[in-house]
Length: 262
Image 1 (cartoon, rainbow, N blue to C red):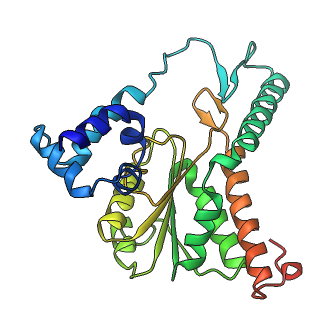
Image 2 (cartoon, rainbow, N blue to C red; image 1 turned 180 degrees about the vertical axis):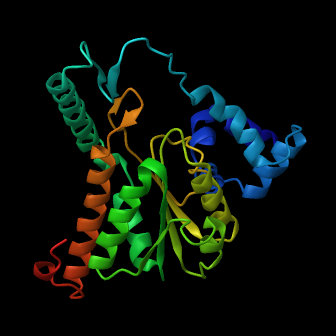
């Protein structure tokens, strides 16, 4: 435990951002050692200790009196909120910066690993509520066009927890959530993970509440105008996954891309 404690202090960012399985692979220590270490330090469990390292990574955004479009490369100031043309131009510039930023970091994202898990799954379940709803809806549609069995969890007609409860062995959950993070999505993701299902988290930050225990985490920054967030970046990301999956199916001889029309 002393050696594991020394490794934790030397690798605080890994402890904050990665899952326990990744930590054990990188450190060569067993998961039980980290769990025992956490309890020896007075924490309820490893997750409790991990929160201590995650806390400094959460950025505090000050409230601004001016209306801004924020994105990954800075702020676009809207000088005249009544000028719709100026608002549109600012939002377009912010979205362009968002896409450029995403394009420059695609090699950092586990795209191939995510596609591997999607193709290996018996059924893919997707949840995204509030702003994320259209993204989850589109991705479910695109997966079905690629002949992947996909079910969107919406909470319509039954509780979200009931829809998660029907997941079976070999099923995968793709969870979408962005600030302020829908609580129903957080709860559904935790339920699926507790039931032993793999989770792919698509969100804004490695320390988002849906990333804990996720098999893969894909992060994307989208432009925002005074609380209204764009879908440009995340839609481009899921289209990349959908098209990559479609090409893989084509190469296996399972799909004729000319017939998709998605």
